[in-house]
Length: 318
Image (cartoon, rainbow, N blue to C red; front, side):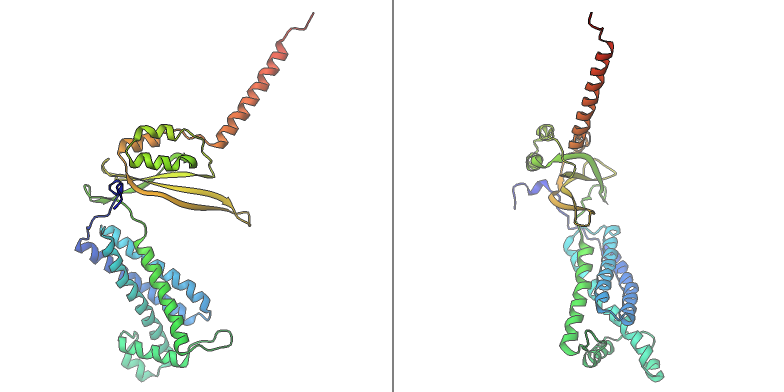
């Protein structure tokens, strides 16, 4: 473990049973509703490429629901979040197949089969048998060919990996500090102060070493507004004992289409910093290159005005 590891937030093992049940409930409901929608989109949509896009959207929706359940359930244990998210992601893949198979049966089966199976095909054995039949006969054509067998299984595997992978990554997300004393999540707030890029490493080292007196000196440089370090503090709204600082380098560039894009590079995340230091950083003056240009222009205007006034009041030579 790094010597400075204690300076950063580490999630606790907190995972109340009520929180886990909340994750499972919210995630399962989202998987069922969105799975039905995705199953219908897959059945009626003739474009396989659009299906992959829809798969990513489906996975993201399920992941956001799981993340919301973890937040309101106050589940801090990252391993538990990963485990529950994996279970729900797998369930989401199964439920979208349930929706697809159910629609297929309603459109192609005779009345006797429909009566025996019902409007929704939930039996895993029936679902599995129909999937095997789909793989044997094929479902649609692409570029003049009709994928069957392992080719179709490969496409379905990619589709499932997109759904599950996006759901997992979205559900776990970034690590948000939790105030154990107040039993609530911290809230982010962007600071106006920016750190010059050339001082970024020294700034981080001073914070890690708790040498806070150096911060004013380090921040004395001129900030390039298009390439500098932005600061975000995650603080507990109920107390002043749980402040964490995150620093991100943001680069604003213009692409070939003339559109502005933002590239981000993490400098450090969730460093434990005293509240008084956060207050000090929030009041630091920010001097950008545009400010210097404005000051120089103002000084030039003032000089010209002063020169004009001198010429106007200077007595004529006799």
